[in-house]
Image 1: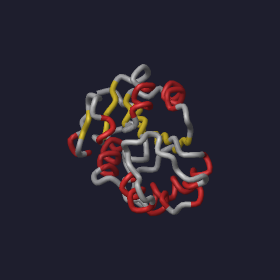
Image 2: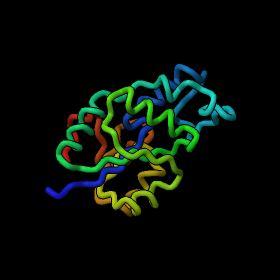
Image 3: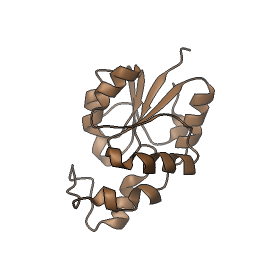
Image 4: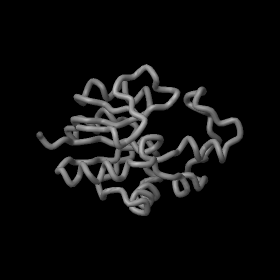
Length: 158
């Protein structure tokens, strides 16, 4: 099998961001998208430091790295969150791989030659489907209409 270049989203893909948001923000819901966060919420909140990883994500990503696949963490987080994101990945034992903060994942996917993407957000999936050959979608209530949804990282095979 040819080595794959895998674009991996962070929030709600490998981190349980929405779960933490429900703890921090009264009335947070994924039914309102985008949710109206207070100004500077992500810059001033401890969320990116305190959020827990999704079970099985780091193990699967490590397995793929050992098999020779390339991982890129590509997140829509602001660039001001770059260092916090890198620290979080390291603290939770994720494979050391490039981290890119950007709002245009489609362009990044083209630049890195991504063949697979893993992302939860419908608007990102719509953009990425024209660039990569496969998209895996962590199952959430807001992305039910997409194929290749998964409930458990262990079930993913490339």
